[in-house]
Length: 473
Image 1: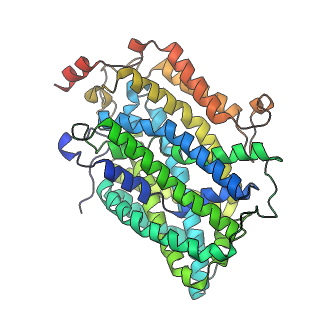
Image 2 (image 1 turned 90 degrees about the vertical axis):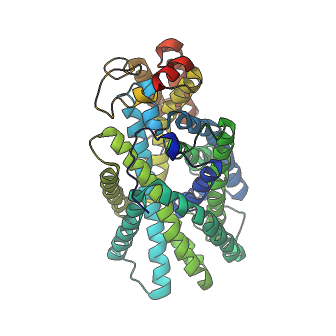
Image 3 (image 1 turned 120 degrees about the vertical axis):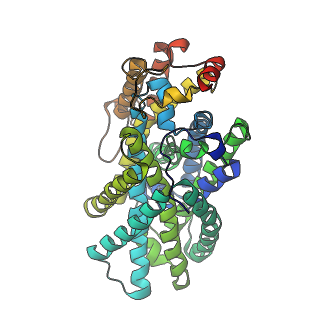
């Protein structure tokens, strides 16, 4: 299979051969991994029992999918990735906001997947063959996982799609067997050593809904376009693509997250997940667990690295996608070592997802408002001005930036950060929200409302269907 050469340039119609089924497969297969499973552990680590954990995860995921899934329709129309597409509203240089947000999201989730997957691999190999569990073993396993992931990401979309289709079946079987393996130790009660993280039930439940549930779909706010740019709007309707995105995200996220909740309770993993998961595993499930940690991590982190390569390619147009992917692979690996040796999982995960959710949500809301305003009609050539190192076009605005859209995002992100509650940082607006983290709502409402008020429809980068047709001709 040849290495994909295409970066964030416009995908020709002849190459847009994927469909809604492929979209479901890639969203399902890539998410059946320990990097997503571990989010099901978060509610248990916060002190919630089974039903509180399940309801918070399901509620957060459903809300997140409702906000995130429509973004898939943007790249269906533009035939390029989402950060580049957002240039229609932020300006062809202002779209760098989306590229940076996407790069940070993918970087964090790639590091998390390699981190958790590597820890489980070391633990299972220690039980299977007596591998030492010190820092050297972790370093070697992390490096091997990162190398395999980088190879998959460099080869690109077609290989990752085939890998996701295989994982959709294989990982489902492995997780189903896992439920049997841990069933004997399962309990619906909260783990005794983990009291409510925020002191009482509802604040902790809401934190879980955001950190464990909502964060899953939000991780895809810049990724969905990486896949739908290969789907043809001529052969597949927007409604089918939207249905496929919703189905893929819901099933692809809820299955591994709920598996994580069940196995965290079964292994009494209130303070840690990887160690108790391996310790509680019956001997006959160690090999399937090792396979799940290896293959699932490569599939999920591979897609994240692929997206990171596209985002860096968008930031540095002179760089090729393959070279950009190798650079971000090295950076992600460095973050894995930092996470393992300098932080604890719960603090790092919670802080990371809450902070990036606050930053990313207003960008997503502004992009969706702009898409609704333009009715899905874009000028593909004008979106590529920055990539082509030229100037002008209907999305040039002011030196390539839309100042009011950018300001709306910045203010929305600032409001979100002021309302966030993490183990490392608490915003000043928490005094007004009763200590409850409302950063997701505050950032989205503030950024979206400001954009809607400050940018009249004809001044916000919209292009009518006749204009788009004329530009395409």
